[in-house]
Length: 195
Image 1: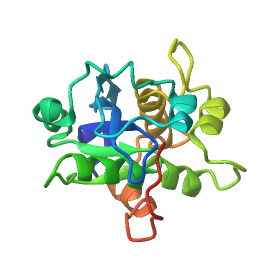
Image 2: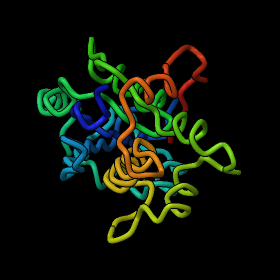
Image 3: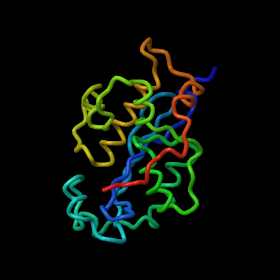
């Protein structure tokens, strides 16, 4: 039986401009290889439409911050390389997937794991499955001097959450079959909303 550490993962978080549908403003990808969480790669990107006041209050990224940032097309090759051949992981993954599919024409992940779905199935006693609540509950921000709701912070804590959830309480790495049974993917995802 093959366990989850046999694959490479790209743990992703995106931040948007608050428009509908949202344009990509920030993207972070945290690799996991052989069960080890690697260093994040983060892109700050200039969206086509302005960042709304609501989005600025959430993530703190202003239009002035991204005025000289590249547009997605200028960073697309690097982004595709970071996502290529790795299993996609995100919290509430349909949101991140929706933004990336619109931003990277023709891109599709090879497989997806959603830490929100995994947490709901593995920790059914929880009152909240918001990323911030899970981070607090499991102490996932320990040692991070980063702002929550920024892509790097959210991707790193999501990577830690995924590794925690994919390891059984006795310390045994779960098999890929076990994880796939818990998060089979599907069409039950609501429409994507992102600030």
